[in-house]
Structure formats: structure tokens, C-alpha cells
Length: 455
Image: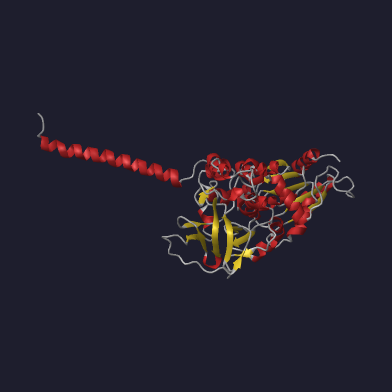
């Protein structure tokens, strides 16, 4: 017997509401997962480190110097990659850095930007000063700009040493290499405005800045002047980790050009490594072991040095830090034919190695090949450095002393990766030291020697 129509309607409405609720919930969950949850690492690394959407149409490689810095058909600020944003303007430009404001005429609207090439990383960007680009002089503009106290005839280039700068890898990957790719074509006729400055950091890299600009760097945070420019560029362009794509850089510069700049800046003498080492070394190539005091230490470092000396290497051990004399350390690295170290910022010093030197990256236990590839393996090729990898076995890792042999961390490292960067860093980087098998270590050195060029 059919129920009255009035009894069916609430049920139909209830069923429809349930279906709609389920669909909406599924959509919301899908969005949240896509927006906030980590993907398996092979894909995640590609999204973070490789910029498939780099804006290569931004640059014109012909025409007068500086033409590539301004294109009136583009918005004032725009993304040049997933990691970098660039703002460019021509006109009456007044930089009041002490108040983080840049007054521009003409300018269609107000913009805000942080000039550091790691915009995908919220943690890093929290430590980068934001600048406001303020329009003035138009019929609808209300801002009253300050008067100029210093007038410049060259472009101003604003960038930041905040974020993760201070870690040597990020010094180069986030600041110096993008800065070189973005300003080398200006031929020194550019005024650097440095935000979030650390005095020791600026002093450390002053030789590099002097190769790129004829003018002293301005501490824009603390400077009380109002600097006026005919043109300004804000933010360096990121290509790839420690790398430059010559097809996308003004003038077609490469990482090899950057290395040549470093050789001039730090007066490095050796251009090419040698199997016999430098003169007066009695046919002994030099091995430089990059030491570490905290995590990822070589537990048997002295034994490694003795084994290397027995294998007829001239051995040096050094541990760079923020207080290291950069010119002297650069010359030490340049004297090496083989450089070896556990994955970490110290390996960034490969930028000073002579061409065809060998870099041996010791990869900690834990399935970290994807990380070591992006940070040092791929950049080494562009720097004309021969790359080798020494993958630490569980028997060589201190993790075997921390956990039982059937522990999840030891048996399933790739499942740990799925928990995100913090889990990877805590388990496999922060808590691990290595004790290299000396027989295997010596064999690796012999392979490295064979890869060196003969005199």
C-alpha cells in the first residue's frame, strides 16, 4: 500500500541532503589534501626544486644593456618561477628602506613583495622583510613621497639576506647564484640595496658583490636616506638549485661564468685538478675532508686520514663555519683535487674546486638519494666537477646503535619519507653519524684518483 505523499517528501529531501553533504565533504577533503598534505617525495622534490613554469619569455637576449629588466606590457610584480618574484619599474623611484616603502611614479596600483628566492617556503619567508610599492603622482594617488636625499644614475637592485641565509648552501642557492644570474649583465652599473642584512654575512661575501657592482652595498633596513633611482629591480630570479639555465638568463650566462667570477673574487689560482696534484706534492693528489662537529660526523675521521695518506693522497681536514675566513678557505678548497664530506652545507664549497676535480658526497643511510641529487649531484655537473657518491650502509651508520635491527626506521625509510621533511630530518640527518669502512673508503679514493685528469 502506497504511503501518503506527505510522508515520502521528508525522506527524499533527507536522502538528497545526505548525498549533497557527502559530495561537498569529499570536495573539501580533496582540496585540503592537495593544498596541505605532503605527496610521496619523488613528486614533491620535483615541485619544490624544479621550476617547469620559469618565465623564459621575460628576458630578451638582444638590445641595449638593461632592456630585459623592464617590459611595460607586464605587471610591475610577477612570478618568474615557483620560487621567485620580481618587480621592475622605470620612472621616479624613491626608496625609503627604513620604512620598507618604495614610492614609484607612474605605478598603477600598490604592490607588496619579499625579495628572497624561496617564496614557496613559508618558514623561510617569515624571516624576510616585506616591501610596499606605493604609487604617487597620478590623478587618484594620495601618497606624498619623501624628498630625495641621494640620487643615483644607475638602477637600484633590492634583495634580501634573510630567510635561510647564513647556511652556506642557502647563501648560494637562494641568494648569490640568483643574484649573479639577475645582475651580471649590468656590467657593474647597479646599486645593491640589501635587506635583512647581517654585518658578518655582508663582510663574508663582499668580494662577490664587488665583482657585480661598482658601488658599496646599502643596508636598506637601517639606512636613513631616501634613495632615488631612474629604474629599480626588486628580487632575484631563481632557475634551479645552485644552477643557471643559460637559455633563460640575460646574456646567456652559466654556472661556469659564476665560478669564474668566484675565482676572480677570491684570487683562486688553480684552474684544473690533476691526478698528480699540484707541483711539489710528489705525485700526491690532495684530498680535502669536510669535517662536521654535530650530526653526520665522521666518527673515524683520523683513521680515514691515515688510510688516505697510505693510499698516497695529500690529506687536509677542515670544518667551515660562519666565522671561517672565506678567502683563505676558498683557496684551500681550490688546492684540492678530491673533496669528500657527508651531505650538508659544507659541500657547497665545491664552487671553489678547480675544474675536473672530484666531489665525493657521502649519503647517510635512509634513502636520501633524491635529496643528495638535487642539492649537489646535479649542480656538480654544471660546475665541471666530477661527482661520486658513497652510500652509507646500515653497518656504517650510528642508527644501528640507536634502534633494534627490525625497527621501522631501519626497515622502511621510504615510509618515513611520507611523513614529511621534519621526520626525515629528525631521524636520518639530525641523529646520524657515520663510521666508514676503511677498505671501502680506500677503494673509493682509488676510483676518484682514476677520474682525475692526467697532467
